[in-house]
Length: 459
Image (cartoon, rainbow, N blue to C red; front, side, top):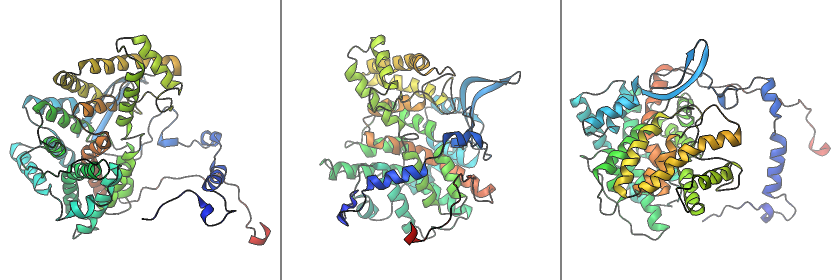
């Protein structure tokens, strides 16, 4: 095996180290922060108030977080719509019928309307028929060189599926839709099998590979595939299904979805586009945040022995903000959102299901701790950071706790996000191909000083 090293001294005793070269890179690449304001650069594609720059149009989903009153923008409780349907109404609808909703949500995002009973049954059967991997793929791809990073494992598997597709580069719409539906179907398999391989080869645990069952929902299959005994409760599957629905889509402006549209606009293949989306989602500022919440709470429970002591909890939260606790990043993970201020509608819905699951698991004391942090954090942030625009819990705040109660390994937290979000990515890929004719190419202004070339001998 080739070993990668950061020490360049192996090729010459007097050669610069990678650290020295990195220092030169930093020195040559630092841009004066005042220049961004001078040239009105929208850093992060946002204005000074944090509002995103309008870069496209979509009918797939909408986020509402304020209203205009007498010409003034007033923050409101957040709302999320899929194809014009309030996410609260969508979830309440299938929950009232005692049905799983993720497959119905995928249909809605892709095709624009809610399916009738026959359309839903046909679509569920189609996804089930696609929920299979090429012969020996698990042995030849998933089991080879297993990694502890499930997002990289997932991305590698997606790129490798390109080689098994008889028509991988064709971006004609019927072919792209077929590819998207197949990927939506196999994401759970690739994620769980990738973890099982890591668990066996790196952690020395028993290896088991269960086959999916066509009559089960996506949420049920995930739990069945993960557990040695294949067993799960009805509430466990229901809570996971709701989480998948809530994570399936979140407007065209989130980083991974925007990545999908940027890469799609170049005319590349579906496997490359989705792999790029996965790379974006992997980042801790995006899809990796729920694991950070779990780690933060693990330390909180060690430092604060009395979970009813709100003064001690608040003191720990201040330590987080002062970069004195957990990862020293100065953040209370799970609190705040780039768009929502008053409330994240996804967090509100998920919180109710998480509380029910906590009762089933006998972990209501821990749920109460989460609820206390959710209540205390906004005032602590306001006091310490002088931020008064409103800070609320986002969906990551409760999703990590939910995954813990389901017994899901932390390595799968972000892949579970991907299992849901590929529904939105697929819808946006289709919409981009249908409507766009130009490659997405934002402008960057050079602020470098023009210089003359110097011959090597004169440098």
